[in-house]
Length: 432
Image (cartoon, rainbow, N blue to C red; front, side):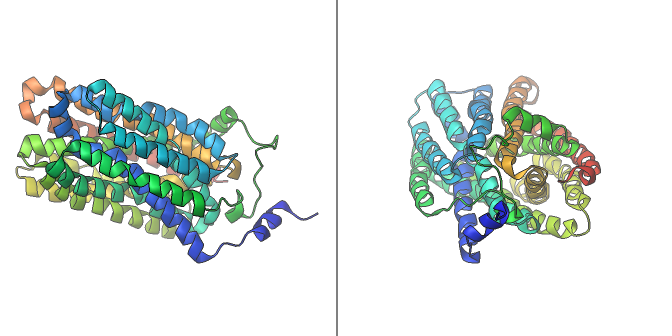
């Protein structure tokens, strides 16, 4: 009888060019994912004024409204992705969140905007887990971190486009048109992906054959969670990523408003500065993190995770310089360092979670990672900063937002490094 893995390997031939095309196409999807998500940060000052919202309400719209269903639905959607067509799930998700982004531009009240943000989150829940699973099947373990790092560029490129283009569009035509302009093109990309991307056999790059949707060997969701959570590496990598994610989300959502309130800058100017001092360094840091991690991995499995520890310890103190520097130019320039260094943990986090998961459960593992990280970072981050800013406004006045951001960044940065260190102590015994 022919071995299932050998049969899967021989039944499909993947050229280097097509492999790169798939990665590039998934990168484009990720760019839309993050551009549509974090565009809101650059629009907040105008939305706040137009709809007469408080910082606490803005924190809810940018955090919990988007994150709750985004996080929870990611797991059942990923479960489907581990059983059925991943490309169909990604294409449908992209079409849904793109349409909902357009509808956000029609909101006339806090309630309407919150509802449409919930629907954006529902759509975006189907992006990352099946994408991670596909990439892991197209790229072998020794090249997987770099491939996931390239996919991870969707975050900084999306933020770059959102801040740079969104900032100028809102200055010229208002925040509503900006949301329409960012949502509509995603529907076209969804069609391209549906008709051109091939869903290859699970386990292809590892030379093994995963169970099909009809197989009784497919582990259940609860079994998968218990198995993964029992691993110290899984727990501490996710908690470390959550603490960093809390900083990143809070900064992306609130830093434009900080520069408006503390330094009195216009949105278009802020968007341009942030595109080059946050998004570009972020992209370089992700790529550097992937390349450095792959090289460190040749000397041992602990090296890449220790890179995460180093990144958080170095990056955290620089947020104080960003938020306390007296002039805006210096504050923007100091932002380059934590944006460049802190994000190096991302590719290592993604690759480690995939590596300690079985080939049958990679999409679910990615979804569980996203669920936990987003419940902590996506809900708590923006809401906590907004709440503390409102509570301390009497004491600090217009500086309350900067104080709130500084407190969150300092505590969570070192907390993140601590969990990554604990993960590095467990990885050698738990890598499958």
